[in-house]
Length: 487
Image (tube, rainbow, N blue to C red):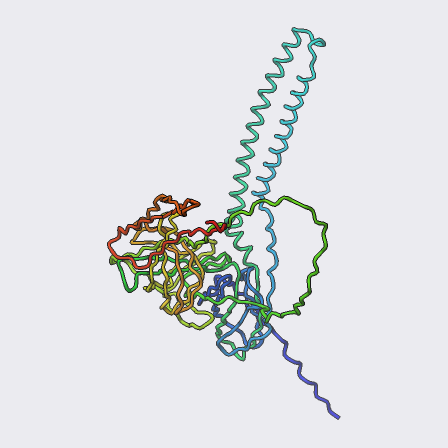
């Protein structure tokens, strides 16, 4: 019976593709949240028929591993996505020139150490001499010899220190030329040590496009505001410039990227809180031994309370000037919104806040003034502003300008579209309040038994030096409360 040998199976080859995230890809978009950012990178590469192992090197160390998503276009299938840390780079061997510089520096260090010890020994020898054991003429010679030797040693020590400084500079210069990187570049490369490995099975040799989406920490944006108030305007006296201060220190520079700002804040493990049984007990009085004490006369309670709020001020310019570039609300809802900044933005990885304008909003507001003249006769100005825009305002700090003059800083709370909020606008010097001294009148009542009656009155004068009429001014003062039936 004839047998036929089976042909051997073809060997299994894996094609390796190594990519660098900075040089082999382009950032397609960046979405910044309050505390993190989402990066979208696009890679274009060639794959061989069959199995391909693609390694993307140089991703930031602050990358969140669980956030990685890989998408693509082309005749290939993605599988086996893993994230790991790149091995530490091996220190290159020293060149002969660098070895010679280090040898020279070590010899100089040893020479400096010997010269220092010799000088110290000379000082100890002089301090150990006793006058009664040395003749006068010999003592003079010894001192002169030590002085001469000491001067030579000091000059030698100073010369050696200078040579060591020169040697250190030469070593730094030689290391920089051999490594080809500055200290800042080295530090930045150490923060880009994350590697992404994925398998690609291609039906044929072709070009494919990989889209890598991942989240990074050390990136955030915070809202800042310019609140400008025009006291002459009646319909929309408030111009609110909504800005975003973007900060990132991810070791990746965002160069010419489309940017979006997200107001959503991720939360984890937020469930419904549980209420546990609340038990009431009858508290039994504890018997104590009583003793007679002298009680002091009851003190009169403090007078009536009053309210006072510190308010800051705003200013708005009505001149024709450069307009701010605003962002579009690409999505909105009851929970969060997305602001798309028009054009392209560059945000370097330097940890510095970079301001971009989200929107310039014209808003209606109702102005009010509050004065507590007994404590402070200055008028506090505030505004109740309605957010009639489509923008969700996040909690932040606002710079207040009133009639084009910077007044103060105030806080802006979180406000959804359609809500109103109170904003302190600082002091208004145009409202002048005078708290006059208390006047007293004394009279007597009663026919048989006379009693004195003291009547007190308080006068408050208000002057409005503005060119407009104000309609909501509130004066807060105390009315005394009697703690005695005879008053």
